[in-house]
Length: 172
Image (spheres, rainbow, N blue to C red):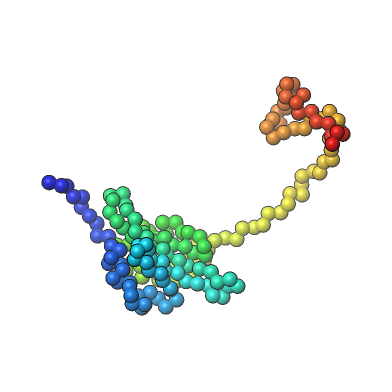
């Protein structure tokens, strides 16, 4: 007799496909979708048409994966403004990191439409780095001067290495 582990009620890919395909009214009007049965992949996205270069502003990718008990589950991945959000955002919205019923997809899409999550999770603009102007500009070293390296840690170089690091810039 084979022992079967108790299974949780996970949403199957076939059930999601039967609910979402082919009726176009299953997703909110601003959301577009790509549904590929052969690749076992569903993608919901919104395009930012107002930008100079249209780009995907919001995206949910749903993939079929195996969990730790080797059951197939549907795992959503959320992207905002080109950056992937952590699994904790999906868990906070759905109560778990996997889809359990078709209504979970609708809840995830509706939660991304709210302005609060967009402002909180919008990637921050990186400041441009300025050139370091506080570094002194040095000319060529006089003949026979030892150039300090980052490897000596400021503690000095021993006598055997100092002869090898002697630099004479008059030969250049």
